[in-house]
Length: 586
Image (cartoon, rainbow, N blue to C red; front, side):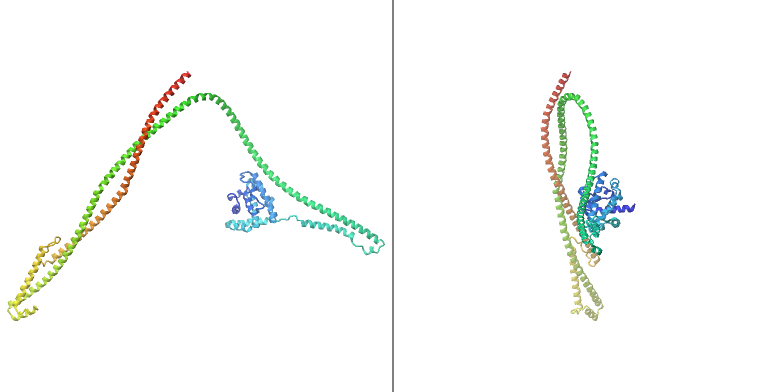
């Protein structure tokens, strides 16, 4: 069963390759039971023999019309095989009824094999072979087996030809002439020397002439009879073919008309039944209509007035409801306007705070600039004092060195003087490396001078100590306390670093404050100003709407009062009319 399914799948795929299919390509072999797809595929193979417009379509389950299509397909296919391909096959073995009624796949496969054989033997067989090669490999193998089996079933078509008839005529003529030749043969030598030779020769020639003339006439009559018989046979065959075609068409038409007649009869029965029901219902309705006509006339007069009153009541009720909705809208608008006013007041309060914020920002900027100036001045003063301290340190160190040297020289001089030796004094004076100091008195003068210079230096130091810079602490009086001076310098450096840190902090605070102010101003401009403008526009729009609604409500109130008066009057009149009708009925 799996091989058959693969074979049927290959057939369906090959038929789906034909562009002449009017509908969707078939998916199952049972869809080919109506013959439409096969006929349309054959119209591409042999368009002269297959016209797809001559077959019926959309047949459904009508097996009679399907069999008509299949018979027409087989008849045209047999004609194409005989006249176009010169081949013949067993067309009578195909069961058309099984295909039309039961969609027999084996019978459909037989028709498809004939179609495949026609496709690979026609003039455009290269195109169809190419389509087969474009199929899947499995379906290609199946198509190969199908084509081989279909070609094995074909045989040469032997049609009766005129040459065979002519040969038969020649054979008949030969037979006739063969029978006549003995009578026309030359006489034997024995006859030539007989006494009745001349007389028999004359008689034989006369007989032969008569026989030849009779033979010619017989031949002519035979040829005429044969030609008439062949013409009659051809006419008979053509008439029989026409009769077959007409009979098949008539059968198809008869089946169609019978089916149409059956459906029409069923429809007629249904229509007659419905007509009888409708007539009965119509009679009942006429009776009821006659009874209700009088009641309707009485009720119509009363209903007209009531409908008018109800319509007016509904209209006034709708208007009253509309007025209530308008009042609710008015209250909602007033609440919304009050909320907008509160938002506007808050925004105006925020806008009033802007100048104070800007002044604070300006003050902070001024303070930052002042602090920066003070820091720069302090840095310059510290640098100047540091330079002065360094200069004083150098001078102090030089003075200390000179003082030590002079003290040593004085000590030596005092030692030599206490010793009282001139030689030692001379050697000490020469150790001082003074070119003009040759005596003790000169050395004393020199020592006095050095002491005077030392005093001057001490006085300068004291003056510097008395007048220090405001940012520097006073320098210690003791010039020998170098460690204290270095401590002061370290303290000044710490203070300088602290000031720089304060300066950096102030600068960062300034940047943060500027960024914050810019951000707040931008947000205020983007948010509050736009919101303020929108609120003002909406407030103006709401005020216009409120004014329009007030005017409309005032006009509707006047109209409502007028309509209320009219409504009360109409209700009063309606009540009077109802009372009068009741009195009349009594």
